[in-house]
Length: 119
Length: 113
Image 1 (cartoon, rainbow over the protein chains, first blue to last red):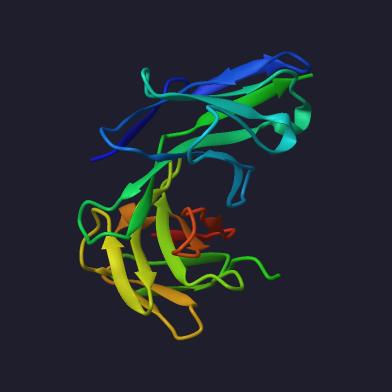
Image 2 (cartoon, rainbow over the protein chains, first blue to last red; image 1 turned 90 degrees about the horizontal axis):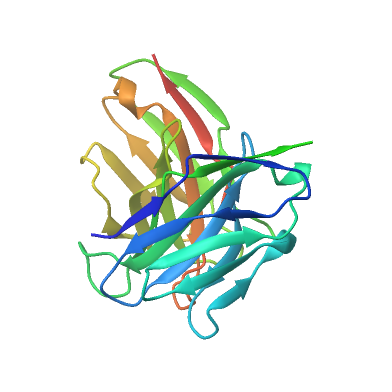
């Protein structure tokens, strides 16, 4: 079964400083990788995704992530954070559901990283 | 284009009761997935529906069941509610033939007392 590890449960960072949120996954097959953001009392919004091709993926709101197959990592970065980036961030992997037939996918999420931007 | 909507937004039930949560998928999407997000945790996959049939299930007991309708909207039913069922329930829709990007609704917050 897939698993996703987000190495930091909370990350405080000063406004305009850079930030990196770390994500590692376990997989022996090709996967799709995602980062979602969740603002308080809201659902999930997709920040960016890696499907194939270039290992550096750019997303919305100035975020980017780098896929590293050898290290099974997909870390999220932003060069300069804003107060509005305060939220919880989830890394997720998509893999065919091992309990059903081909064509069925599920997202496996990490436990999340709470990013707090300090003025 | 209408996004994913869920109803109700909040719900309070007591242990042993049954609950039905509803989800309308984004226009053009034919697959609906349900996730449970307990407080302080990441979402966990419950099951997925495609063409009105269950098309994958996570590690949840049979008292969690669902339906998908011809217009691709969906219901999540939970019987014999337990305290641990208290969570945010998220619905996500997608188009099966795509690269599996899932679009999430705002969720239903269920509290079991």
